[in-house]
Amino acid sequence: MQTKRFIITGDEKHDRAIYEEAAALIRAGELVAFPTETVYGLGANALDGEAVKKIYVAKGRPSWNPLITHVSSREMLNTLVRSYPKDFETLAAKFMPGPLTFLLPKTDIVPKEVSAGLDSTTVRMPNHPVALKLIAAAGVPIAAPSANRSGRTSPTTAVHVLEDLDGRIAAVIDGGTCAVGVESTVIDIMQEPPLILRPGGVTKEEIEAVLGRPVSVFKKSAEGTDDKGLPSPGMTLRHYAPNAKLINTGDTAESLFSELETQLTAGHKVGILLPSDWKLPAKQGSSKNVVIYDYGSWTDWQTMAQRVFDGLRWLDKQGVNVIIGPLPPEQGLGLALRDRLIRAAK
Ligand code: TXA
Ligand code: MG
Image (tube, rainbow, N blue to C red):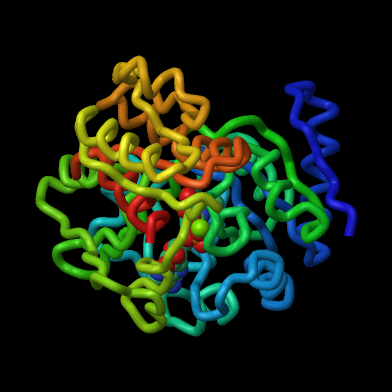
């Protein structure tokens, strides 16, 4: 299959033709990758079980790992959701559209291929004009996991999508680089206290500030490799992995540079996710076995989150066999970054 590449230019007539063609592909049961504010999604008509099955095939995703359905309006959301728990309106007023995904009781129109047979389903309204226009043009909700091969690094550009899925999907819409860079936060508000199933673009602190009370975060089992049957299937899997071996170091320059020395001594070519304000010692900096990716300023978690997946992919392309980088503390977006980096290093 030849994968079409549609490029959004900002020219209204040109872009409208793209949305119409891509929407027609979605309605015909084909797969179209598209940008959201978090990462690129691999979309299919969420009401068409046969179309949704193609997502699992293209990605190589286990069939028990359910999908998020994306909507462009509240009316569309209402067709998917049976009832709303009390905190929904409070959170939706602030984070919809946005990188917050709700686990909610589903209606019968959501096929089992989307919910993996569960009675609840995850929904979100992305805060990205291209995603919203595509969904509205299709006139159907769009089920979409991240547009990468299962287990691999999530895509934040159309080029990343094509690296993994060229020839396996009908089209990709190129709408530039994603702003958030890590996936949405998935929250279960059917329980008390609400439970964050996956940390992501909306932070725990932001959610607690809006709700006015603490929420909890799902703690993964230490060595989950097959987490079929967990409250949120897919949450402890090895994921986001580069080809090179990823080693997470402590959150200081000393810790990072000492790991670098160890890896260089062992003869490895080492890629570094390097905070821009950490200066590499001269000897290591001049080594031909060191490749640096500019991670953004340490404590600027927003920039680091936006760059992390691009950094892992770019370092892989430089032919390094080890990648090292510091693990941020468990606060703000640091929580989502840690989750991705720890799973990528498994
Ligand atoms: O930012 C995002 O959320 C991106 C963009 C494309 O919207 N999508 C994304 O989808 O990250 P995916 O499939 O890679 O991750 C969705 C996660 C799954 O790992 C799954 O564990 C959880 O959400 N999930 C989905 N449906 C669920 C359900 N019915 N019950 C529990 N967990 C669910
Ligand atoms: Mg994913």
